[in-house]
Length: 361
Image (cartoon, rainbow, N blue to C red; front, side, top):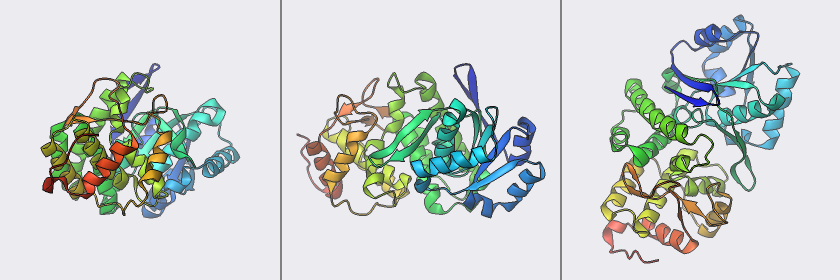
């Protein structure tokens, strides 16, 4: 499964022999490994295998806290202290936050070095490792400092999921469901029936979600034509909620809430049928646990002012027509205002199935 970026290709490699695959493909003299401290503790044999091959290994923190200028600077200085070169290949092993940071660092150091992604969570297998978006956060919003920098290869070892908490698996399933909602009803249904303890079942879902994302990214790699906006369904609200909760609530849970609210917006604006909205709401709530109460919707709205899809200072989102179908053609965006958001919020809280809700804005 390949897509082209300026004559380069990113290849997805499924493997259960990570260290040998990396060593076989890349010179040990060029490879520098940045690995999540959590993964290093859970899989000490990996560290041993890499060090036995004289590969430089740097354990590094992960989590949303590392997506800051402070940790960006720490990683850059650490890599320079290790005397990396322009030809160094940076290999990032960890979840989405560490991949986001390492990808961004690799796009900046020496005006760009090559990198390889090894996602260790379900979420990062279908999101951060695919598509070339790298970023860290600003106090004003999520992923506001970033670049497009595609990894050479993405290595996926499904065995990492064996030590992942169920809540993290569900976070990853939300991103897979999103891909189903925008492009493939069958994938949506696969996610609803997924056995989180069955790696083979999850592997099929991962491959399907990756295929959808690759097809979209290949048409619009740098988010200039609008096609890539589809992948942001649920994220206008979701990213704002992450910031609202000060990143204490996971990306998956916030995007799940974003999917429900943006489905409500789609219903209010006349794109989505009531029964489809109710189906989506019920389905998402089965997959992901609820976020804490939102007590200040105006603050959530204010956070949306920095969303990267906004046009002419107007807040935009991706409406849907049905499960598997976006409502609009490229660039797939519709405008919302606070009154509409407030109405969607009330609608979700009030259980639409029990009331005859007026669509008028």
